[in-house]
Length: 567
Image 1 (cartoon, rainbow, N blue to C red):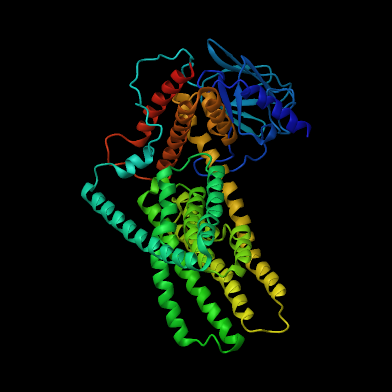
Image 2 (image 1 turned 90 degrees about the horizontal axis):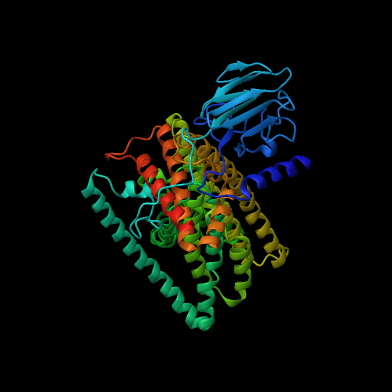
């Protein structure tokens, strides 16, 4: 407890007077993983840890004490580190480090610095103190808060644009006619699917109006919105670093709500009719169970294949925007939410009044994430394959197949429990009371679902840790070059600090400054992920200017625009 309090106090000292774009911090000490960050991004270091398991520490004074004692400015929880081990000095001539340990050495770029000795440092140099490896990150030229403020045209900063990644994906010079043809086909598919989906919903709404009146229609329209709003909040909570553009997020939801519905209905109805021809659902419990199993398999395979096709299309068409496990899960959640909102509308519109309480419990209270969970499993597999693109192709293909199999299996089992319970309820078995049947259905159906959600949460949190390390690793060179300033680097690698800074800018400087700050942070993390993609082997763009250059130019313009708004 004492260690945690000590670290929190130090962090408040470093961030409470956060002048986001001024040179409040002189530099940053970054704790390096034990292996190369590009290959092992996100792994925790072995023995050497900052206090509180932080990965970076701000250098705010001319003298910074480093050691194991909690009174040091930089605390290393490493038994090989002395209580007071080193002093990091900064003045107008540059950086130097002094070994004040009585016995333990330290190393600068693997050159030993004996106790009592000191040596000069340059930004980017590596330190080894005990078992801890640190890197000094600071601009090669000292940043200044006296930034030039040339005149700029109003509205020249596109803070609400889709983003650099989408601009390169939708633009460029390769096969422009083919892109226009694909765009026309996509719009035609969207229009046809939208008409079919709205037509189906209109028929259900007409029946609801005839049987239950306007109240039933309003209930069917509003109650299914609750899970969709919940998924929206989840996206806002977990989309922390390389935030997804509103255009792709909307496209994922539209795929589930409009495009996936017509082929699903068509295929399920055709296969269910074929199933009825081969099975007699009225031939006692065995026939009812067999028919329920067939229905469950049809629903699980067809629905997850059609929903998953949206994820595959998104990965193939916008590969640079589909980065990792985080993106796969978030896009899967949205596709599932879109599908569920239409399905729930139909259920609430057409079900008898006595079934409405059970529908609310099963589909809104307990199962509000059911469809999203199924599709997110496949999304996690695709995201892991994208994240590990440099691995052998066999292993690359294994993860999506496992994710799709898990999605189909969980969906099929869930529907089999529900359909089987419905079939048993119609058999009038004396020993099986409605209460007992309902409890067994809830336990068997939602137990595995909740377990899958816990697994997805664990995968998502681990993926967010890897995202933070990607930002730390691939923006370090940009900090050395002065593209990113130390305080900006400290915010960008910590999602909580970044969100707090955005809120503070909103309340202090207004909506436009807030949007500009969000665009600036997004451009910086986009630069880090673009560099990561290149390190993973992605090809250069077929354009004279690469996304990295556009990101850097955009950062300079956004910083200048925000600085003007905050004056």
